[in-house]
Length: 129
Image (cartoon, rainbow, N blue to C red; front, side, top):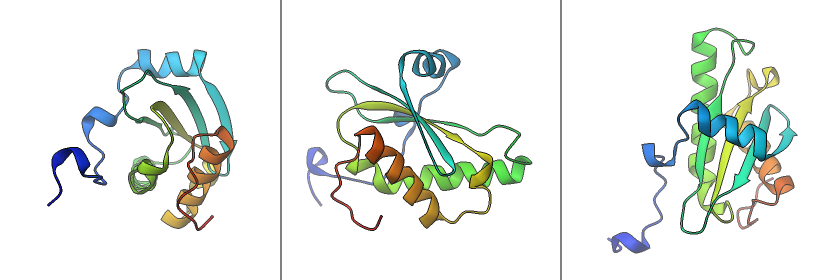
């Protein structure tokens, strides 16, 4: 096993999640915004030393509770698999749009990568989009 400082795991723990309405409101007010496919990305560069943090918004316009939960799981998994390709510390809020319903993980990953690339947050080392 690699030493703890050298591991690049694919976890998505509580420390990486944005919580609280203040954090979401600050990003909406001060951050930048980009829409790509089934996702809307709000982001703001963080201070030095912090990691990439993610918040999710799935409104009732998406569908019922089961559909919203599935969409959240897809977005979290797409982020988890691609988090190491995001450049620099940043806070991200991904808002699910109604067009995301019915998409597969591959399609959600493609939308996420495209948003990150257009926002200048994607390092571009992983191919496939």
